[in-house]
Structures are given as C-alpha cells and as structure tokens.
Length: 456
Image 1 (tube, rainbow, N blue to C red):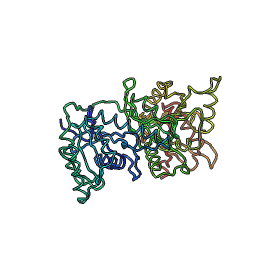
Image 2: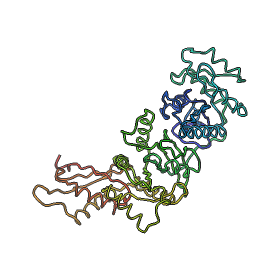
Image 3: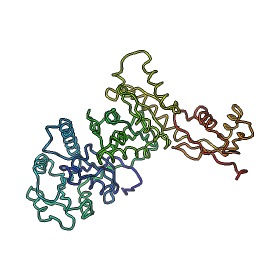
Image 4: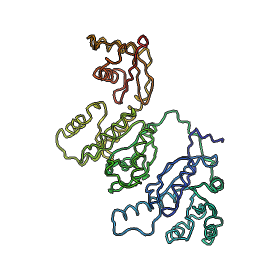
C-alpha cells in the first residue's frame, strides 16, 4: 500500500514515548509530529494525560502517544500532587503496556533512580523498546550516553529533540520495528461530528470524554486543572462517527498564574477552530459564571453550534420545575441564544448522553446545510411581505436578494438598497426566520449586509 498523508488509516501501529519527567518526551513528540501538539515547558511533569495523534514518520503512518513522566519521588506532603502523580504514572504504564513500540527516553548525563526503576519495570517489554538519549546536541555528553549499553540494550540512539539532531536516523529505526500489514485505508464517507468539551475546571469534561470513547484516555480527578493538553478521541454512536476534544478547564485570566496553564487555556480556546459543536460543560450544582458567557461568545463568534450540558444533574434536588428555572436563568444570561439546546446530563452514570449526541448530530447536519440562491430569495420575499421593512424617509430599505456564502459557519450575504438603514432589529427578525423556516433552528446564523449593485 502507498501511504498518502492526506488520507486516513485504520489499525495503525502505536508508538509510545516514555521516560521520567523533563527528559524531552513532548519536545520529541512535537518534532516527530511536525507540529506543536503538546505543551512543552522546563517545569517537570507538564504532561499529565497521554496525548495521542496519528502522524507520518519516515513516510509511514503511526499512532504516536506522549505519556506523563514516571516519577519515583512523589510529594507526600501535598495530597493533591501525590494523587495526580500516581494517576499519571498509572496511565503512563497502561499506555506503555498496550503499545507496539516504546521509545524510552533519557536525558544526557548521569542516570537517576527514576531511570533505573523505569528500566527495571519495563524489563519484560525489552523486545519492543528503543532506548534514546536526548539533549546530546553538538556531541554533548555522548560518552556518558553510551553508558546506557551497560543496562543490557544492544543499541542506543543519541538525539536532540529540540535541535533535530539524528531524528532522521531514529525515525528510520522506528519504522523498521513496526508491522504495517494490518493497516487499512479509512474510506468512511460520513464526516465525523467534531465536538469540543469546554468549560470551567472540574465540571466533568474528562469524565464525559472517557464515557463517550469508552476509555480512560483523559485523567479524571477531583483536583481542578488536571487536564492540560487537549486530549483527542473518537467513537461511533448509532453509525455516526464522532471526534472529541477534551480541553483544559478555562478560568479567568486573573486566576491563571502558571505559564503551563496559560498555554493550556489558549489551546483549549483554539479548539473552537477545529470543532463543529462546542459542548459547554456546566456544573449544575454551581450554576453559570461570567467565564461561561465568555467561552460561549467565542464559540458563537466562530459560528459553532453550542450545547449547554448541565452536568451532575443526578445530584440536583428533586424539586418540581427545577429544570425550567435553570433554563430560564440561562436564557436570561444568554439573551440572544434561545436557539441553543440545554440538556441535563450525568457524565458519571450516563444520564442524558443519548440526547446530547442526538442533538450534536442534528447540529452537524444544520452546519453543513446548503440552501440554493433561488430558495433563499423566495424566502426573503415571503418574510418581507409578512413583516415589511420601515417605510419612513430615513429608515426605508429593501432586501434586493441574498445568497449563502458559507457553511460551518453558516453565513448569508444580503444585498440591501440602503444598508445603513438596515437595523439590528430587522436583522434579528431575518435570522430568526432563517432558523425557523430554513432549517437552521439550533445554530448561530451570520448576516453580512452589502449595498445592492444599483447602489455601488
């Protein structure tokens, strides 16, 4: 099979990057992926979740996984950090166990106790390990690096992930150790529904992601801020494929102090450029915040479908009309978004997940709905007849014609006799009619107002 980068493949061999914190795993991941996919920072332990991506290495497609660092010394005085360290190590070991090939990374210099314990733990997997010593740019500490051979390895690769030294040689070695006989071309005709899970920290985004993908790809903890990178996953529901992006919790700028969290938040916001539907996770017990409004505004600006997911609904008091009260509160705070669905769910036990996914599928279809120019203009004539524009000398205008210029985001361009007289109230009327009569009931609709040709 000839592998083409633009196509997608199934059954790819998996390659995992492993090692203690701060040896350069994420830098090597970004180097092999040819893009800045994971967060890199001198602070040890930046990567917590296992971040995965399909990439091309030496012309062949592989499933590349970056793991959290293996820590031997864990802070017993900080229960939160100790708990997270244990979760990270457990997740890393699981990814390593399931991998087809392990790139075991060390930093140039003396071996540490963590390095030696990691080697001991992986002894049974020695046949699928490629040992790599990073940070050897310009021949730095090469003699010490070759001491790795004393741990029973036949060969060691000396590289610099930051500078690119010997990456080509390592790439060839990786491909030589992999079996591509089961790889198949993914010829699925239906495009996946791309959903991004957004919201404040600790609202259940990772719990929902794991439930949807039937995995534990995202670390789940009660400690806010556990997720740092954007974690990708995929699943199929009722014959529809989905692609899910689990993001770091977004907090107010004033509360973002660490460089790491700053990059995490920015990366979470940028997922709005990669998704179709933004699911805003709201802790039903805590309610909405000003930050939720800002996240939603960013999604609407990009024309994304928005679903308000009221998570932890199973813990809400069983009081009559509770949902109606919450819904009215959301409509009050988001005055122009009554079209956006509000769905109570429990990511933990699965309540409401079917409604959530069914709504996301409907949104996806609307985002890619395309109206003919003839249909649009028939509707515009009808809507103007039902509610004529103002007739005053300074407020008079007429919509001459319109057309749809974009899908996902859905944008209509209207040509108007007097654009300056075209009021926001009439624009709101047209947008509402488009949603009600033209099949865009669940998504944002943008109008671009231009002068008609006679006025040019």
